[in-house]
Image (cartoon, rainbow, N blue to C red):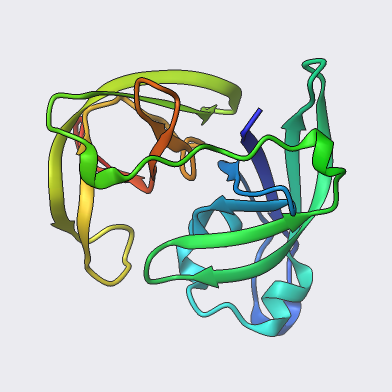
Length: 191
């Protein structure tokens, strides 16, 4: 499966007066090299926007991947890159290429308002849950989670819950058109 569940844990760090933080989110298998794409805030909470080497040294990441037999296996992930401003992170796991199924990506300029969309993710810790909705707006600008202004976002009306961050927004053919970033009041979700 192209969709993975990500567990992150940051222990208490006395040097920076940080308490233990843990979370769950979603990501996608990007390629056969084991790269996983997710949100920055899945890896580190927004309050840690300035990821220091101390933080990065202590964060523990597990990527849970369903294999071809439907059995979920955990893999330790390393951070390859992160961008707080656009809320993206790239991780890497070591796994045989034959066990990976990279996500198929569709050009998001081809989507239309009213088009059906689907998300698969760890909504409220229920792994691999399906959420449905429609594209309700294109090229939206908004401030999300204390980050710099984002523009060009896709607004969807799918009802999502914590844990779905980093999930692929899929078209009817199962191709990814965006990555879910945030939910705001009501049914306003952004990818």
